[in-house]
Amino acid sequence: MTLTELDTATAAINHLFDALGIKRVISVDDLYADEHTPDDLIGILTATPAAAAGITELQDLDLTVDADVWPDRLRALWNNLSGDRQITMLQQVRTAAGDDQELDRMVGGILAQLFTRYEFRPLTLAQWQAQKPGLLDAATMPSTVVLFDQSFTKEGGTETAGLGLIQDAYAMCQHHGLLCGLLSQNYTIDQEFEGWQQLSRDHHLEAHQFVLIAKERLQGRLTGFATQIKLTVLNHQCNDLKQEAVKVLASAHQQASEELCAMNIYDFEHIVFRSSYREGVWEPDTLFRVFGLYHRAATRSIARQNANLAQQAAAIRKVSNLPIPSTTSLRHTSWKIQRLELYDDQDHLNNHYCQPTSATSTKNHGQQTIYPACPTLRPHGPQRGIRATPQHVRGNNCRSRRRTNQGPSSQRRTQVLRPGNRAQRLRALWQKHTP
Image (cartoon, rainbow, N blue to C red):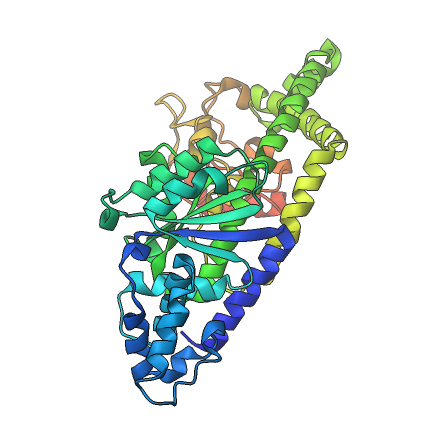
C-alpha cells in the first residue's frame, strides 16, 4: 500500500461521507479481542521509531532519549488512553511499521486511518453487545456505517456470526442512517459479487441491507475498498428509489388498463387485427404494444408529479457521480437487462413458425422453407406452398429499437431483424439464407 493510494482512498471516502452527512463508523471485529499491552507498542517503536509519525499522542514523545526513559513515559501515556484508543493506536503503529502481520491484524490500523475524520469506534463482539442499545438509539444516533466482521470464532462465535449481527441491528434500529457492511477474509475480490448474493439467500437477508467487502482490499487495493464503501452507503437509498418507482408503475398500470379497456371496437379491430394481419404480427403482441404505449405515457405523467421520486433520484445521483477511482472493474449483471432491450427471445419468435408438412414443403439444394405456424400469419393460407417473403416476416415489433438475437442458422431466419434501415437489412438476411 502506498501513501498516495491511502490519501486517494481517504479523500474519496471523505467526499462521500460529507455528501451524505455520515458522522460515525463502527468496526465490530474479534481482532480487537486480542490482549494489548504497552509492551507491544514499545517493541514496535524500538525497532521502527518512524512508525510514531502521524500518531497525535506520540508527537511529544522523544524516542531518541535513553531507552530506559521513554518506555516509562509511554506506559504512563498508555494508561491514560481509553481501551478503544489503545487498540486503534497499536493497529496504526503496526500498519505504519510495515510489520509482517496477518491480514486480520492490519484491518484495525488501516480502517482507523481511512476514517480518521469521523468518530471511529473499534469494538469487540462483547463490547458491541453491551453498547449497541445506546449506539443504535434512533432518537439520538447520527448516520452511522457499521462494518461487521463475518467470523467471531476468537470470541466463541460462529464463522457467520456477522450476518446475524446485521439482522439483529436492523431489527433493533429503524433509523434510515444505519448502513451495514460485511468484512470478510473468506472471500477474495473476485468472489465478492457472487458471495454477497449467496450469503443473502442462505441467511435470509435482503440484498439492500449489506454489501460484502473482501478484507483483501485493505492490502494495497484501497481505492477498490472506497468503491465498496460507496455501494454500501448507496444500497439502502437505491432500494427506496426502487420501491417508490414500483408504486408509480402500479398506479400507471391501473390507468393504462382502464385506457385499454376503453378502446372502442372500431379502433380495436383496426389496430389489433387488421394491422396485425397486414404486418404479420400475432394479435396479442399488438395488444400488449398498445398497452405499453398507454403505460409509458401514464408512468411519465405520474412520475413527474412525484416529489419523493425526484428527491431520491437527485440524492443518489449526487453521490453516484462522485469521482471515486477503482483499479478493478466492478462485477455486475447489467448485461442481462441490456440483452432484454436489444434482443427478442428466440423461443417467442420461433413459436410463430414451423417446419412445413409434406403437403407444403419445397426443397431446393437440401434446404427446406420455413412457414409461419400461425395461419393468420400466412397471407396465402395455411396449406398453400408459397414461400414467405421478408415483408411477411417483418412485423409490428420491427418498429422497436432492437437487434436480432444470435443463434443457429435455422433460427436466425425466423427472427425479427432490427433497427436502422430495417427493410434493407432484412432483405439482405433473407437472401443470405434463402435459395
